[in-house]
Image (cartoon, rainbow, N blue to C red; front, side, top):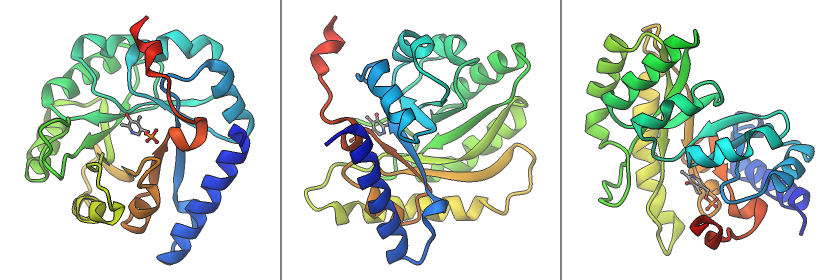
Amino acid sequence: MSIQDNILEIETQIESACARVGRSKDEVQLIAVTKLHTPAEINEALDAGITDIAENKVQEILNKYEAVGDARWHLIGHLQTNKVKYIVDKVAMIHSVDSLKLAKEINKRSEAIGRTMDILIQVNSAEEESKFGIKSEEVDSLIDDIVNECKYVRIKGLMCIAPFEEDVNDCRPYFAEVKDIFDRYKSDERDAVDFEFLSMGMSGDFEVAIEEGSNMVRVGTAIFGARNYRQEEK
Ligand SMILES: *Cc1c(COP(=O)(O)O)cnc(C)c1O
């Protein structure tokens, strides 16, 4: 199957998942996760209608940025504060904010170039040791701190990576917990809090994530095929 066929297939699956819970497919934004894939492959996805692409590493954005056509770039991986300056002028949204320290650096670098950065708070609702993100009960205080200290950051919602489960249905409670927090913030009227995006679901679990309320799915393997991790050793 070509990249274009894969995208069509995923769009159909998104539509079916939406239909199962009475939602419209237009509510869900598909983001193509392009890590370890080439600009040529990424451009093929853009030609097939993809508008939003995501990388988990700053270096990969820098390596590919010039060779990739018009797209909105998202950073979805752990971000070190000393690397914010390299991408602050390149990405539309950072999904992986999980500390005030990082938010303050994003704020400082955004102010310096005269923009406001859209961010998501990464919530590790399963409390997996191996994953980044904050616990659900830490969300309120982090949001309060960012609102108070970061004028050039706008909190657009939440991001969650579910644990790998043999039965994907076992991910549902982790998604549902983050959806509950998301719903609570939709009525927040502070200027810096403008909840719009609930970024949950990857190749293996995006249908379940949509059924649990996600409106932004990050899909890599199902679009581009398996990643060649050996490339990373170069
Ligand atoms: C790699 C990655 C994805 C995509 O994973 P696939 O299983 O290839 O769809 C989604 N989100 C994050 C944060 C990732 O690092």
